[in-house]
Image (cartoon, rainbow, N blue to C red; front, side, top):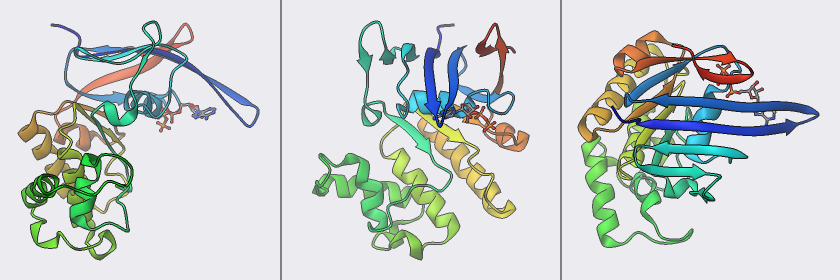
Length: 227
Ligand SMILES: Nc1ncnc2c1ncn2[C@@H]1O[C@H](COP(=O)(O)OP(=O)(O)OP(=O)(O)O)[C@@H](O)[C@H]1O
């Protein structure tokens, strides 16, 4: 089977006199994986490298036939060009924008662009898909925890991401919200056929999202897949 994710990157990180050599190789042909491994090995940084939030010094990152980064070919797509859906733990909703504008945000052209009629229609479509149509004009702080979660998912779904990245997505939620969020994410992945790369210490998250374990470990100074 062809590789679905092919990542081989290196980066030196220096902060406050401390250096960390991020040096990782990860290849998989399954489109739904859960990264596991010791604390500090670089699982979060793998997600950040795929999302374009950190820029490697060397190596390459490919998702299927899409090259996101290649030092040799001088390719480094900007985060917004990667079509990667990164669900942040706090959802990163924009407090000054309505639910409708939050969902349409990623479709705008330019930093201050207004939404066109068709972009508003698309945003409304996704709000309704997540049972939020009646809350289109509300601001995030007026929504319940569950509604905010669904808003964050609608905002990802509208961009039709090539992959969904989840980093301990449900750990801060109470048990009821955690279960409903697992179900919403599972539905999104299923309906849109979106691949998944997740980091979670909770086996129930992995099982609910049907992700295969990919265990990372250190071999000769590199972080690689060990099982
Ligand atoms: N800017 C930085 N400068 C130096 N070191 C850094 C920097 N950012 C991250 N690190 C180090 O990189 C390593 C990998 O961090 P990362 O958060 O990816 O680990 P992780 O495997 O996700 O850990 P955990 O399971 O505990 O969340 C850690 O040792 C961290 O201290």
